[in-house]
Image (tube, rainbow, N blue to C red):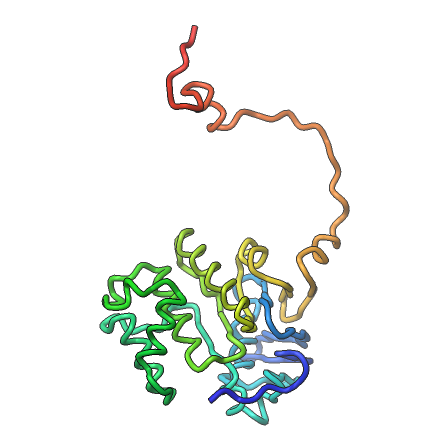
Amino acid sequence: MTARSTAGPAIRVRGLEKSYKDLSVLRGVDFDVDRGGVFALLGSNGAGKTTVVKILSTLLKADAGTAGVNGFDVAAQPAKVRDSISLTGQFAAVDEILTGRENLVLVARLRHLRDPGAVADDLLARFSLTDAGGRKVATYSGGMRRRLDIAMSLIGDPPIIFLDEPTTGLDPQARIEVWRTVKELTENGTTVLLTTQYLDEAEQLADRIAILHRGRIIVDGTLDELKRLLPPATVEYVEKQPSLEDVFLALVGDDGTDKERS
């Protein structure tokens, strides 16, 4: 059963610190995540994004600072935090031997939900996997596996979902499938904290973006607010060189018929 939410932001982080021996990973991280929408935590490899997610999901203890998820303190109320969230890691946690539907039914049974079959069928339809529901997951494409993985994370209707670099290793088409899935989550009122190192992913999905660099949040705002941090663009004349597309169309023509050349 999902823990009852309280007023305030979905996630609140203040002064979060974490070190591994002599390596300081988080050095005073602060941010708030409003309810609903997508909050992107953007940073390069090793910036500490996964460490933040592990602390927020109660998998790791912070050295200092406080963090609240759904109104519950991650250190003092870990069970209530876990009841409020779902975590999807960088690699799909699905059983390839089972079918897509069997994966969903299994998780629904583990969560002690009524009518696991109906829960599974509803999620298969919601994620456009009904036709593939009876197939073994081993036959799924990367995008389908990730969609199934996210569908499994929604069982029990958690109000907050952590997606830790969900498109790592996916081809462009599979990435677009995942992006579409994330947008659908927010349309249903789910709060998503997304970690990513892909600039275009944050630009496509996020309502707010925080950049984590060297253990600190160096900027936090909407895409428009972040763009205003740069000087206004200047317009200059630059001679345009023909692209391969220009050459192709000039030789072949828009309708695919060869143009005669003198």
